[in-house]
Image (cartoon, rainbow, N blue to C red):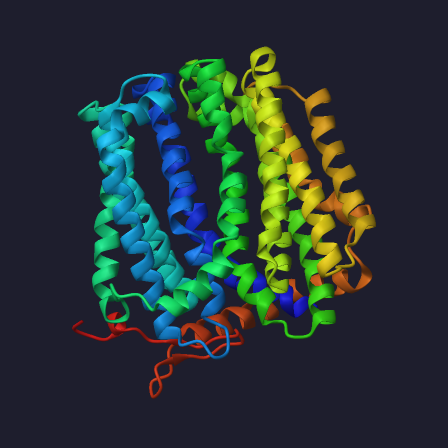
Length: 518
């Protein structure tokens, strides 16, 4: 069972590393953005970015999820899966952008409660870029090209940041600067990768294959959309019920809480290939239970840190007018952690092939979110929206648990999970009740309490005896050095075959761009 944890950690680390770096860069540039953008402008940009992501989920039609599954199915032509997936996404995203552009004015009115057609046009053009960018990244995941994935995503961020800062601070383009920086630079990287991958791409569609892919992927789209709407509808309702400036504060709180998304993103990318590679159902059940427990522990550690240090983060990294954003960071981080737990259940459901059951759970969560937002935002503002998000994810998790246990029962470790919740709640509660809230002393004492949490879990008996032995063995210097040597060897292509050896369930053929002179 521990081998599955090591595999997940190895593949997930590469995906997570790029997210960690990009999030750190973005967070440390918040002082610049908040100094030059009013909360209203910042809120407008973030609402538009969230709208693009929501629209992209719709027009992807579950095709990327289907590519990730069909690529490994026996009897399917991998080249056709890749080519048909691209053609479908290209034509749908192009048509969607063309149809939406004439309605830029009404779209901005609906989303922002003010006339910003130029901002809406940038978002619509960004829709095409984002949709195909997700396809390009999916190809790198299929080929297990972790180093290139890391390099490409980091390079995108490194180039985007100075351009966006110039547009914000020098040209003073306001909210438009963030969209131009994000999607303009992204378009350049996208076109380069499409050119590199051109031999694998086609504009023609294998209709039979696409129908099969849509039968699998299309049911995931409503579920994914309703789930993402939990992070989208609240912003629209805040604009309507509390104002665009409050939406800006909420967006900043989400930016910090997105530290949890670093964990969930790496897990989301790494877990499905591992989960689907376990052929034996009994082995899979035990592995899923262990992974769920340890991933929950990692998320709990992140939630505790963000909750305890929320004031310090906002005070150091944002302008004074954004100070109240800290009140929503802890609850939002909790919501993101619950979403991360949901991802485990999604993969378990995917193993059964019954992806249509995602939608009832996420629809119920969305309805809960809307009702509670309307009730809680007027009296509590952004904190009310964050609490509504937690409640919605609790509903989604409860329903998904009931559904997956009927189709593929997993023996979750409820005793250890309850202990984890108790230790996390106690850590946050003690910090909030007894420790200072402002200044250097607050930052130092709260950080110390947060970093003590793993020791508290160890002392409370969270780890089993076997896990303690395995952890000691893994942390020995000689064992760490051996794993690093093995990782370097696994990343190196074989000189004769061009294949990257490794324990994963698929082989990664060296692409043309690895060859000199291409």
